[in-house]
Amino acid sequence: MHKSKGITRDIVIVLNMNSDMMGMPATRESDPILDAMLSKEDNFPFAEERRLFYVAITRAREATYLIANRKNPSPFIFEISNHIKEAYGRLCPKCHTGELIRKRGKHGDFLYCSNYAYGCNYLKKL
Image 1 (cartoon, one colour):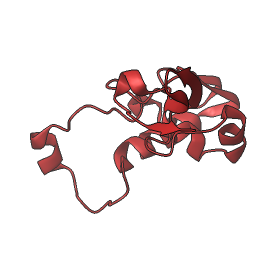
Image 2 (cartoon, one colour):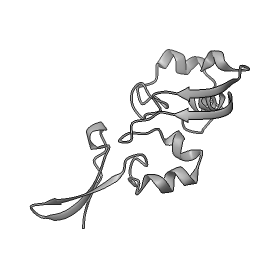
Image 3 (cartoon, helix red, strand yellow):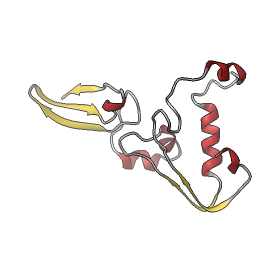
């Protein structure tokens, strides 16, 4: 993505648009040395990665494809289109990327987040 600034192609495919350690935005811990070197003027979450994402999706003349795991998509995907957010279904109110899944347990029905395996512990009894 860094090298694509100023370059255009007919079709752009952006891989790993997941919300995980190596995704976009990366959920790994920030490097304290790198943080010290970057400006702190942006109070917006993931500001630098957001700019890089914008560069990537604006390089296409005809079409841009974003490839993500449905169970753990990047929040950036939902920010570019309300249509995508509506089509995706009910999003978790805690992590805002997981889908709420209805399940029947021994104590009755409940909703849980599809990102449970990735650390989101949202749970709601029905």
